[in-house]
Length: 333
Image (cartoon, rainbow, N blue to C red):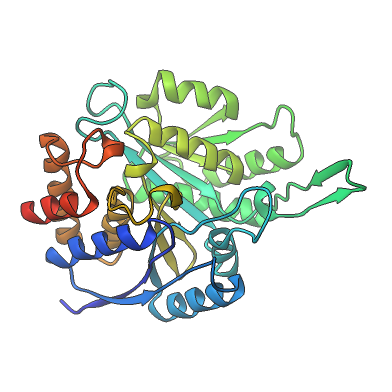
């Protein structure tokens, strides 16, 4: 098997630590990956410079694995992660969650196995907003039929490839009759091309409740940008939190897998960060580049470590370091 070139975007905060850990583990498996390292430090470099560097690398490799990048709240530079998705037209955000041994609420094993497919470039995250005389702020929710069609078709194609039987479209069309109405109407239209897959519909607030009460009833959640962001985080809570949740951003030709949690600057450099979110995104990446054996090896090693519960970072209920958890997983490999 020939090596596959992958852009490894290190991120900042805990990003460089978990990126190193993930790379060590993947390199210790049977995976054949040629890494192109892309360093990012938004505190020291202009955001446009970082974006250009990331784009240049990903356009060359077509596959990226990305650590978290800090985004200030309320002021400062815009999200470099959102900018990357828009500039590369990574329109589909995919976040699978599946029950992990020993983690999350006390559901029976197997109860949680769902995937959020989130539109990644439109909605309220379009960034079209302004302030009026310091007294009012207005944000425009942009929904297009073209964008809705692309994400709906992606969700049904994903369901088909994964042999899933149901897609649930998330909306608030009872109130937002034009924007969410367009999204829902488009999903209904696309569903007719997939007669073997059932289209379910849920108002977003009801969906949040149903995920707590009956997560086993859902397979693929098709959601606009904001709703998908919120519900995928809620879903991560069902399996132990964002620290173990993987994700990927798909375009027509390019894909960037990423840890879905933040950069946690408060614990950066302390060697206590949990690398499993980025590592499990790396497992998604290995499956995408047709290296399922390596993906399976790493997944089995992670399951073994979680089952043993002897070497875990503090956020997982243990007192081990990032290095110790990494070494433990490599030991099982």
